[in-house]
Length: 92
Image 1 (cartoon, rainbow, N blue to C red):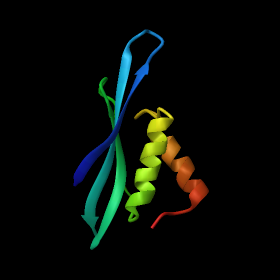
Image 2 (image 1 turned 45 degrees about the vertical axis):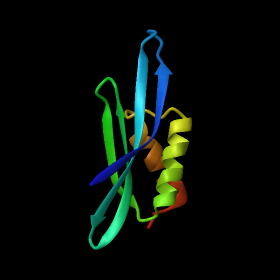
Image 3 (image 1 turned 135 degrees about the vertical axis):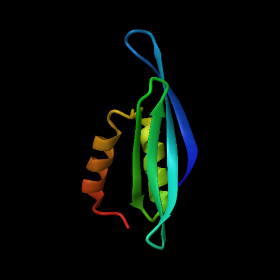
């Protein structure tokens, strides 16, 4: 599996600490096809991987950029992606 960092956002938390979140595009060959997914990591040990969301790289990149603009964290990423997929239907 390959990953490419597409964005990094810094969030100032209520305790005045900083949370740095990296947004990654995942790419892997699976079942004879190229699939793309999302990973988020932060500087406090938070991480989430959502592999094989779509075979369409541009849809996944668009979603990653939207998540970065909205300051989505690893803790909330699964819910955000699930909501988006339920609205858009299954990606292929």
